[in-house]
Image 1 (cartoon, rainbow, N blue to C red):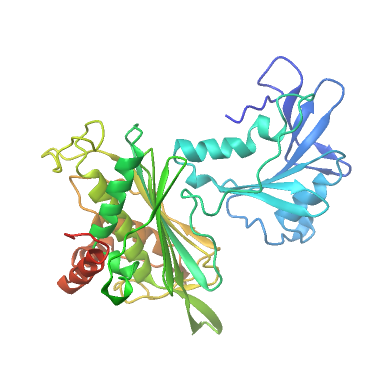
Image 2 (image 1 turned 180 degrees about the horizontal axis):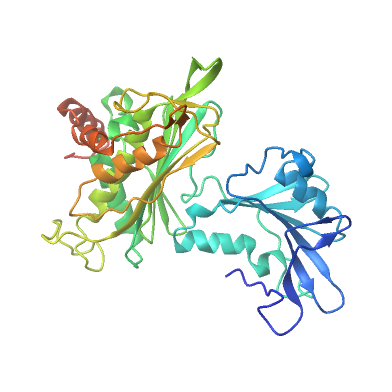
Length: 410
């Protein structure tokens, strides 16, 4: 896919990928460059680890207490002309530039490569033309300093004292949508969600305000910043919807340590916000070509229009999940790493409302917070009832917020 020729894939030289290449006393896992024509040239050296390995933590034993990143750098510096360092644990793929000081250029979460835009971005940074150039005579292509943190496709960046919850809806339909349709539907769906009040406060002094949208490279984004929370809602021209939210973490004393607290209610609110928006956006689509001239009503057969709902929590190393929302569960748990990722939850819009995928995703996230008896076992059926049973007062407050943004009907 990335366009490199291996020693076995072609019957000509040079080939580009050489496994277990020797670098003056050590082997990398593979090198990228030009090999087999009598003048080997290495431009990138790679270090691979298992999915459970943290790329930044020291490894004991034969690794000399070096982190995987440091191991990769040490090996690469033994090869004259090496320019790039690749490190991966098969969940995360990183690219560094081997300057006097190692410089991180790209960090790609492989579970996030879910649409054509994300794939194109991955190829732009990691394919043969990016790292090697088309051939030895062509100047190497410089890579941008990394993804634009303000691009609508990017999630919110880390923030001290906050943890992030990211939720995604990935449709199965193979179709591009027009920018004006996305903007209109996304803004309307956001303001109709009963979870709106948990993310967006009404304007001050009873004035009316508009939700500002950003359009770029086939993406449409709405972003709001509050005192203790931030939220970014995006939708691509291929129909993927993404909600990333950052919440200020409270502190608690637990297990002889001061720990950040992940609020289970924030997980529920973020997943509910995503699924509310996806439901409102996609329900009118009755398998026709788009939103234009489509009646605003579902068909009796239901709309089979989804591939997956998924979610993740980031920046939660040593944090504790503690919330009364998860009644039957053990009431606490600590994750084994800095992030927690759910599986993909299928959802057939039209047959099922937005509460089921939200509840199942939250239950899957919770189990990765581990206690003496295992992970937190949340009853998704009970949680689904909690998501469904929004009080009228909560709906009314969300409607009040929406009305202050020039919207009616929630």
